[in-house]
Amino acid sequence: MKDKLKVYVVALLLALVGVSMALYKHFALGFPLFPDQKVGIWTVESKVEFEAAGSEVLVSLALPDSQQGIEITNENFTTSGYGFTEVDQPDGSRRAQWTRRKADGRQVLYYRLQIYPAVLDQAPDVAPPGPPMPPEFDSAQATSASALLDEIHQLSANNETFVTQLLRSLTVEPLNENAAFLLGEHHSPQHITATALQLLSLAGIPNRIVRGLVLEDGRRRQKLIDLVEVWDGDRWQIYDPGTASAGVPKDFMIWRRGDVSLLDVEGGRNSQVTFSILRSYRSARNVSLSTATDNRATLVDFSIYSLPIEEQNAFKTILLVPIGTLVVAIFRILIGLRTSGTFMPILIALAFIQTTLLWGLLLFLIVVGAGLYIRFHLAQLNLLLIGRISAVVTVVIGLMSGISILSYKLGLNQILTVTFFPMIILSWTIERMSILWEEEGPKEVAIQGGGSLLVATAAYLMMSNSLVAHLTFNFPELLLVQLALILLIGQYTGYRLTELRRFRPLVENR
Image 1: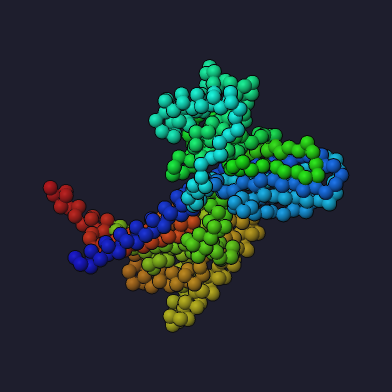
Image 2 (image 1 turned 90 degrees about the vertical axis):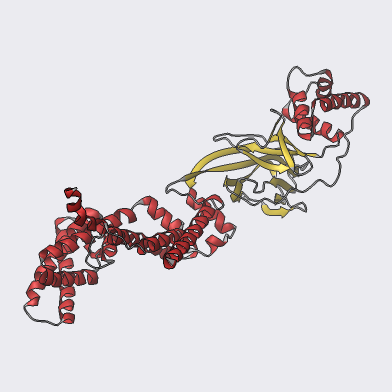
């Protein structure tokens, strides 16, 4: 009982560790659980245009950073005729800087990046250094602003509802007289956002502007959209002035925070920057692997993915072998099926993966059948065991060569895959079956040979399954779960399925 308890405990621990590591790779690193799963990749291109004045030119463009739910990759900068530098700012932000000694006429510069969904560790929000500076209003504006804030204060319960009511008062028609006076004739989204920021500063609530893009496939010549971000005492909270709702809008990419210029051009005029957006799809596995590699995730950095491609391809097949051992354990221990050799069905299944199932079965029967026929003739020579096996190996190689040549001449290219069968194993199988024929008769040979092919077929169906192949290679930690199952099966000592036939007379007598 204690031994069984140990097996259960070890199996449970192995399963928990394996499942936990696999779930971590799926949820934290983004590895897909299913093959051929795609993830949307957004390509964003910013186009900087200006008229050069025929003198030195310096262009500075604010660059975005990776943010919650978004990873930035594959940044490209066009530098034709320009020098380029990426400058890190004191506040941690980045700017692209193009320079040229002399330029004249219309100039166009491009910055392109790709972004995709990712789970990133975000740094905690940094509290504002102090209360905001009060805005500069004339006396009439100050009176209207104070009156509007007093009204909003009466309609709100906390900072969150205060901000919501403030934004609604500036956007929902009909506007009251104070809001209408502050906005004047300018009801553009940019002016509404600027007015909201001024009123928040007057109320003593820390705030800043957030500028970004709504990601929508096929959009061209887009401008940045302004949002409002407010410090609520614990964290920064974003609000959409157009809807007065809290939270980042769907598919919104933050380009810049704070009152920082998007584009600075020295030596030029009539400058502008526009954005184009395109969506494409890539393998979710490749995207997740690229992200994990860039971030040097330990579970990926010290894994099969760090090996050369040739070795990775080899492990794609090697990692399928435990699936075959699990199938063998089920058929041998639980079902009670007899096979010729314990793990020979796994080797046959590996050959079936290369030959396909039907052709593999046909080739196996041809080679083994011909080998048995020749082996019976060799038995008349009274050779020693080593001599017989060596002769059978030579005969098997000759058979495989002859079959390959004949199939090539007949145009049957599928039969050329006979070379994938393990020659030594086939030779030893022929020897074992011939001895079994002499000792037990042809019936036992048919039982064990048929059992081997049945188990090999079941193992092949499991090992060739695309989902199984995907999970074994991308989640090798699931080998621990397979090991746990094998341990549980290995301690089973009850009746096998094929042994239940002995109780049939008891059932019939009842």
